[in-house]
Length: 258
Image: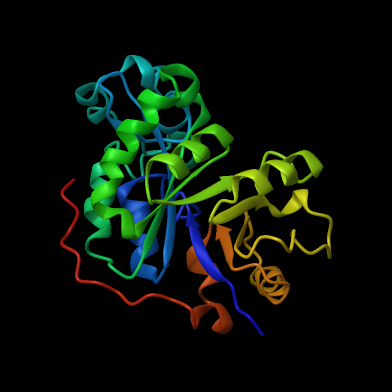
């Protein structure tokens, strides 16, 4: 029976603040072969590891990432005060370059970098994607660019050799047609959008379904041909003996400089 590999959604976000170096590193050290993080482009044209387009939820600050320069971003603490209180304070805002530097210490693992639609809408497709691809190019073998934005994925296909993953807004005939046109390396979908028991579109060889925290459900999808399962709780999922078999070895990474 095929066993799916696990992808740590925004790092080890069940236990640590999302999209932080602490959470991403914890996922990698637990054995994750894949981690995923979100990026937004800030006012200086640098990429901040951040899901939202502001820092209200993660840092408690009503500040748009599009109005903040890199120095201002770096002064914030994204410790998720509502979820975790002060348990992880201070937690610096990571820059994408720091995540790429972290990946050097885990050469068997891959990072999925999701460029958010808000940044594409705010800054424009070409200015955003050209800068992102230039940053990722030196570590291309360890990166997959993913997005909900079809045009962004088309841009990657036309301007680089980086692997692509298109995230579906809906699992329907319109998106099936667009997927056939795009032919991404990976199709990504919330598992709740697919009818229970239904096989993902068989024309596409590689699928990732999210967000799943039930190991038995992950194994069931693996038996139906799903290669990757994205989870918020990589630690708990890897306790399952079948899923634990497909982990990547630990690395000797230096301590985090906080």
